[in-house]
Amino acid sequence: MRWNDRVYGEVTIEDPGVLALIARPTFQRLRGIRQAGPSAISYPFKDVTRFEHSLGVFTLLGRLGASPKEQLAGLLHDISHTAFSHAVDFLFDSEEQDHHEGLKPEFLNRPDMVAALARLGHRPEDFFDDTVYPLLERPLPWLCADRLDYFFRDSLACRVTTPEMVANFLGHLAVVDSTIAFTDAEVARSAAERFGEMNRDWWASGSESYIYNEFADVLREGFVLGVLTRADLLADDAHVISCLNSARSPLIASKLQRIGHFRPGLLDGFTPRVIPKTRWIDPPVVLGDGYLRLSEIDETAKRVG
Image (cartoon, rainbow, N blue to C red; front, side, top):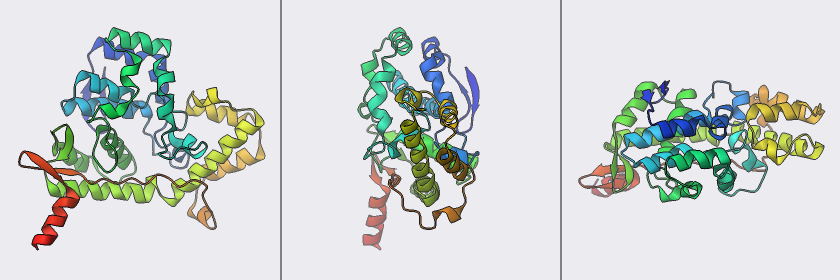
């Protein structure tokens, strides 16, 4: 399997077992799920899919020297995302906005995934908890392969970064004590600034709040009218839209129309039910045989100055 990845360039996967897992229907479903959720309806250039991101995390982990098992964990980390990604976190209570994590055992125990994992010598339960893989998953504000890959992809799609910037970030990554760090403080600072820009202008912006809350209302109405079921959310974006359109509901149609033709004026007087999760990074920077967080380096510089 070869493709030209928007982040890493030419990428090849040759392992027959990994290729067989990728080919399974449960994994292929991720092709139809946009990482940006309903925001992709408003902004078609936000075309990153969960399939693309999952392959990217697998690739980045390999470049960082992760074990084959941790690479597989990266490949599977988003396997349980529902249609429209984090949209369900605005429909159901989810303090960390990670409803999909609770669905992971259900997806990994599907027969096609059980068979593919067995071929690779693993069981579904080996990948229920991403936090046991330190390069794949770390809490904010640390770096991890998942966070870096979605940052790189989303920022390129939104033109917050350029391919040259991302290549520079990638060229200054290292692993120290199972922790991803930058090898240069100024590169780390630039990455943190661009990450903050993505959070402010996109991930946690007023427009995202509006779009996600309005789409949650659409999903809620779909359930009330009986055109949408839990099983439908376990399919993909196109399937859910088809279900919603079948309702011929004026409320659903009007809200989808506003999402599809979003304009800033819609935010006037708007009060969200759910606030989007805020994201930030405080990158570790390699110093000698260890590392310091960028904030610690800056604090030290202030004291010395």
